[in-house]
Length: 89
Image (tube, rainbow, N blue to C red; front, side, top):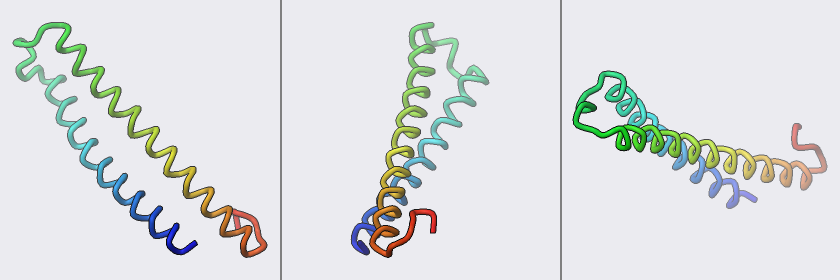
């Protein structure tokens, strides 16, 4: 179980690091879109593609977070069961 916990911890930390990088990039993209930097050179289709990319990144991050949380819950539940308690103890 300890190996599983270490693996999950590594996975969560990697996920959080990726989140931080994506949030920074998303913020930069939003700032550029809001300020219109270079937007005059982009077609409406390209502008739409920028927004769709941001939405896809947000969705991917949300799904990855949900999977990580579920893995942690399963590990916590298995550990609690092995100790004879509940996952919330």
